[in-house]
Image (cartoon, rainbow, N blue to C red; front, top):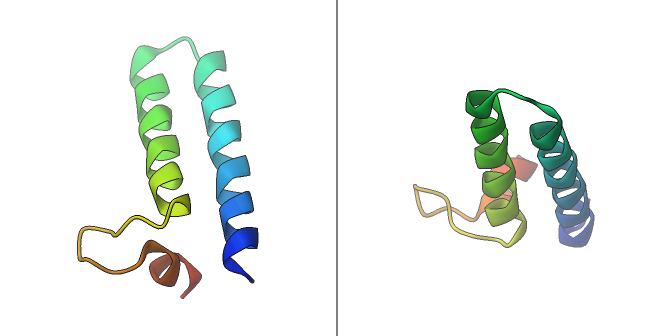
Length: 61
């Protein structure tokens, strides 16, 4: 799987998570979903994770 394909899947997943967050009425669950979507966005941008590893390498293993 290429980086572009991985990025596309992550972006689609983040969009679906945000849609689910909007549909929920409970603020706590909505915030948790928004946090997960934000993490996916950072991964899709190729940000380094906490250990300094490339996020793509970590997710593709």
